[in-house]
Every structure is written in structure tokens, then in C-alpha cells.
Image (cartoon, rainbow, N blue to C red; front, top):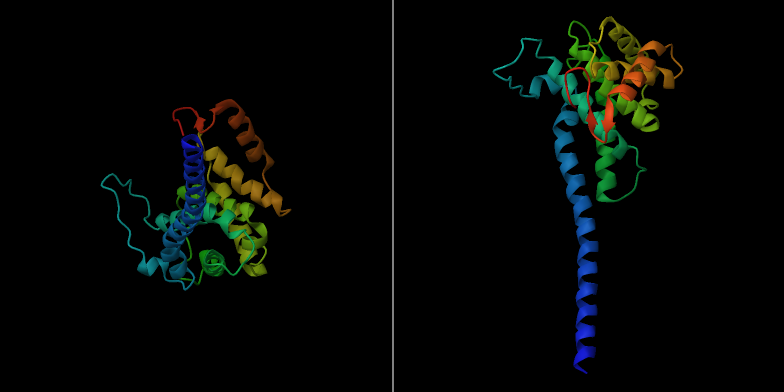
Length: 226
């Protein structure tokens, strides 16, 4: 009898543990979805109205190298969208998470337009600074990750502006390090939409990955580990 009671108690404890784990899974997803929305909302809600430059506070490091601080806005937008794109590619639904995705996607599409509109206060810094090659690659990456949700809905004028800006970044001669990969990312996107692309930049990056890649998350270029 005592043994049976112990077995019953173990079964109850195991069931409770499984139920708690299931509930935690739901809570974990909501936590991360809410956190992602919290990170994205200040950038996209402002940029969708052409107000990112006006409202975003920029703090410069004491070691700032003197480059134009407007590179900050492309860095914020590009890296945000590269990370956000897979989530925004999920189908619409009526859940609270689905409503968050829809709102962010609507803001993002308007923000993409401002980023390449020379008449917009939020027109990004596509020229003058070499750093634009890096951060533009993240924007191209977002289009590759969610083409149907983020690229195809853009109007033709906006798409043509991106193509022009991306090709214009060929003026930047990437140094012999991970910048080769950023250059290739942009050319890969152009290839994906059947635009003229620089295959040399793509193949160079592929060869360097084969040379530099050591193991998961460990890549050595000439001087750095990243």
C-alpha cells in the first residue's frame, strides 16, 4: 500500500512538473514577443512617420572615431529589421502576438520608404561613409529573410530607390575582413530579385567563409575573431 501511494505521488508530481513546463513555454514566448515589440516600437513607430532622426537620442562614445553620427540611424533600423524579419514573416492571426507582428510590419513598410526617400527627414546616410556598406547589408538581409512580407509590398518607386542605393555602395572597397561578407549580402539580394549583381563579390565572400570558418560561431579573418 505504501509503495502504491509513493508511485501515485510520483505520478502527480511528474504531471505537475510537465504542466508547469508547458505553461512556462507559453509564458516564455509571450515574454520574448513582448520584449521584441518593446525594442522595435520606438524605432519603427517614429520612422514610419519620418520622425526617427528628430526623436532618437544619440549618445556618442568617448572613443567615437569622428564619422558622421547619422550612420547611427541606419545602424538602428538595419540591424533591427534583420533580426525582426523572420518573426514578421509568420502568417497573420488574431492573437496578441499576431497583432504585434501586424503593427510592426505596417510600421516597417512605411519606414523602409522613408529610408530611401531623399525628401524624407529620415532619409538614411547612404553615401560619404563606408559604414553604410555594413548597415545596408542588414537591410538587404531583412529583405532576403522575408521577401514576401517586406520587399514585395513596397511600391515600385521605393524598390527602385533601394536598388539604386545598394548598387551605389559598390563605391566602398571592403577591407580584407568580415566586410567582404557585408558586400556579398547586398549583391546576393540583388541576385535574388534578378538585378545585375557583382558575382565576384559573392564568390569572394564564399571563398573567405570556407577559409575563415572554424566551428559554430567562431570565424577568424586576418586579425579578428567574430
